[in-house]
Image (tube, rainbow, N blue to C red; front, side, top):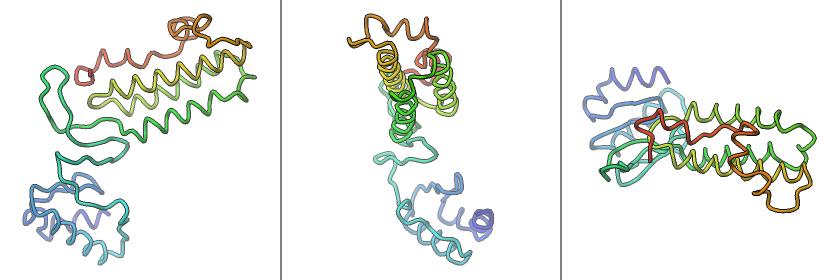
Length: 197
């Protein structure tokens, strides 16, 4: 890939096509994207590298969006002004993947551990995810993760303590955060001036 990036510049494709490689897998062009795609495929072939055709496409921004490294790149809107801008949000797939992992951690078969151990593991998982996904308007993704985590932890506590009701009385959201110590993911955005939504 290093040879491809160097070749792209040295062979003059960057200047000729005004197509700049932002990273190893995304090439941004103001025009002539189809020609840049053909040139990229030709160079990859000469370097004996295989292009993953299922993930390779021309994306017209800002009308379309694309996912890369867990983020969705495309048109975002300022919550204050409504102004459109080109930016990133955590991709739906990555939010779903985290929620699935949280569901696995809070299965019925995991009730033999104590609540403090589970909450500690959940906090590490959630904080690690949020440390990576902290760019752009992240509040909707953080809310979705927090709601899912609270619901799953409450269900887990109900099973563990043989609580028949929905658990909102015995395990309200406030108690999940204050008593059990579950991280409040949405509170993190207070220090992210660009993340509020």
